[in-house]
Image (tube, rainbow, N blue to C red; front, side):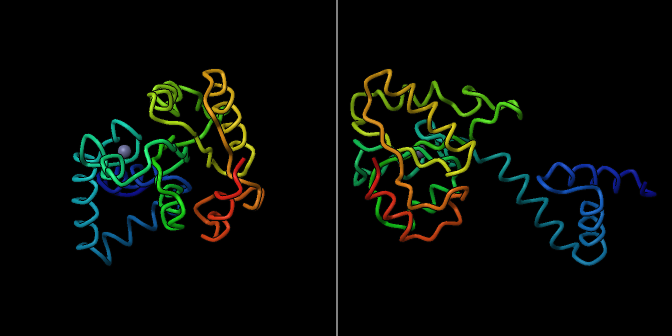
Length: 196
Ligand code: ZN
């Protein structure tokens, strides 16, 4: 393909990004090497540092550089409510509404059997332990309103109800098929108030 081993390696590495095919990867590599060497250096350093320092919060699974994240450690949060979201971006969307004062559990994905993502990959066992710690009284399922998000909410709901937990789901004000991350704030806030 390319006339340089290093360039080939870079293109292969860029192809690991979601949605990036060989053409896009080539364009990115050529751009960085031809027009933005400083940007390439910055990208290289940022990746190296993030991979070395970012880990998962021991309590909620979100990304953090500490053992436990700042949200989980915040004494002002309502520890009796636990909101389950798919991604840190969805958590950020919930936070922006200002309507939720409880704590979170971030699945870092959603059930997708065809992609090999099962209960273990979304940390279902860890969520069970977290939700049944004796402090949590309500688990609010805020997975996305598409087929996989609904299936994930259903599986979690069944597992938690089996342990006698009170489980609610964001109300249907959120458009069907939508990713929470892209839903406007007042819609999410209303869906939270109207949860059942
Ligand atoms: Zn946390």
